[in-house]
Image 1 (tube, one colour):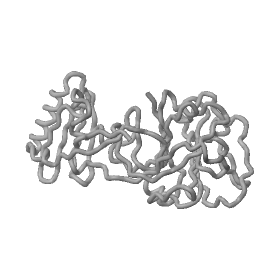
Image 2 (cartoon, one colour; image 1 turned 60 degrees about the vertical axis):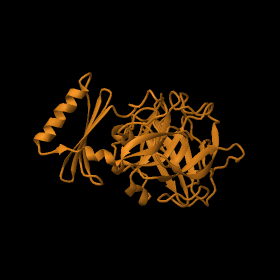
Image 3 (tube, helix red, strand yellow; image 1 turned 120 degrees about the vertical axis):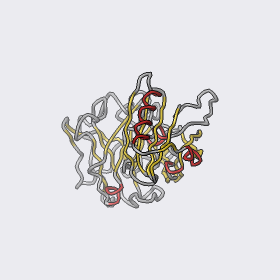
Image 4 (cartoon, rainbow, N blue to C red; image 1 turned 30 degrees about the vertical axis):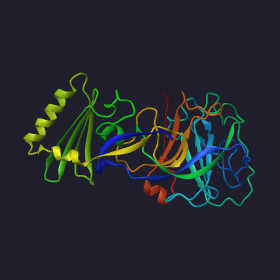
Length: 315
């Protein structure tokens, strides 16, 4: 694990969360119930191969929670399977291009086969026979640099490169009115503004300001002063340094890693169900990218996998 540092207000720091790190272990024999990427999923007689607009879906991976370390909030038994589109963008443009299901009882024999057409020649697998059995280890996840909460609200360095101390923030202004704060942060030509109470809800907006970032910050700051806010430099006494992780990898739960920007709002109710990394030479998401499946905390608690969202990104 390669870790770096970021500075944040203490009320913004993401809490430590457990994760199961998954690694390819060739010594594990493939089987219908194995935790794996690719291959043939567990298909008892009463379970159909899923289809979508363009025909049979492609099987990406499955997690056998009978074999994985226990992860708080996640199933303690059964298999969760992940299917997606057979096109070059993995079904991400199709409303029905993501399918996830939980098979709680895995005692029945697996008898199903892969239907014709349930494969994408443009990836993410090298060939139809690609299968990577996975071994899981329970760890504590660090937030990653491209998570929206880090990228949008980190105050600044220190960073490993002495010349890169403005990786997340070149200017931060804080104003206060009672318990309510307005925080305005610039990162290059990108401006982030939010208003709210630490520990509560935040109203947020982002702007691209070309070469007038400082002028726009001054405008927003004056608007806040006119609205009864006052400058609050004492807020910077609440800045703490945290570790962030620039690594990716396959994982269940934990914090996601993005090669681009986080597609989710900074404080969204969105739990990472699974992250699959490129695992060359066998697996490649676009140009060395990653795939993510997200679920709400309520749906996960109810074991309802019908509303899982899929996203992928690459370099």
